[in-house]
Image (tube, rainbow, N blue to C red; front, side, top):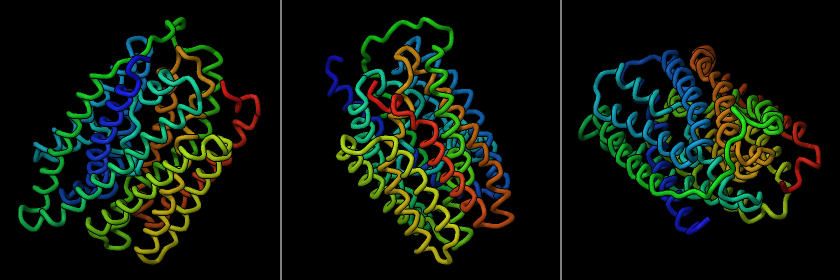
Length: 396
């Protein structure tokens, strides 16, 4: 692809600004709704509705990307995020704010990789870099950049406590949502400047049978992890507040350190990806993510729980690039958009468990985190079982 370095640089700029904005928004939305008087069960329902909206959007954008270009898939997804942020920032009506949250897709949790991935990014990288080792390296760079940028998004969230003393908490949230909208607008401009290499013409209505067979395995493995994520991650800032009476500044500090660890893990992944089997990396780190969630749920004090979450973030950073590369490895070139969108939709369907998260937290605060950890462990084991055929782990 011509000017590949300049094009990848634009993608990095987009992911950096997107990460700052989305990390703040994702950390803030549940506490903002609480400040507006929305109860915990309704917040969980909002998260589930958001996932439903994202499922339909992802499926539509994937099909569009295969036919018209993954650049446009990325750009349209960013338009939704921008519009959602803008609605949240300018509205004082709770109903419109919830609509903005749904449009922006604020339901997937505020992990260090939150800003790196959006509909079309996996397809764009897969189409632009055919070699799996190159893909892992590019995904690692994007996750490092996103995790580092997430530090600033988390710092923005910490500013709520400081700004709230002078302008009021609700106004502080709105000002920072507006800054997020500006950053998403910059990300959108970067995406519109991208160029793509020519792709194979689409020869099927949906996808080739070989691609369909491969993604069915990915979906099985990821669905377990998605259920665990849905239960444990989207309302995590609220969980810290309710269980440990943590304030935004304390929660921000935990997430800032976790993003540093995610960036470190992603950097290490880029350095060792040529030496360690990608499947073993993907499987073991996913299971370790679950182990640390269980430890978090059993922690009696905030520092200990935060410690386990921070170490979990390190293994998230190490494992994500390999797992993403495996997810697209067996997909035909002409099916990247549709296949990755179906994977994304299936993952979001499994994350509809977030609708039950509020109910489980209302029943017992540690319970959704514990169950989420068990499901993450099961997902790691499923990865190993689904892709243990050696022929599927060779470079394609």
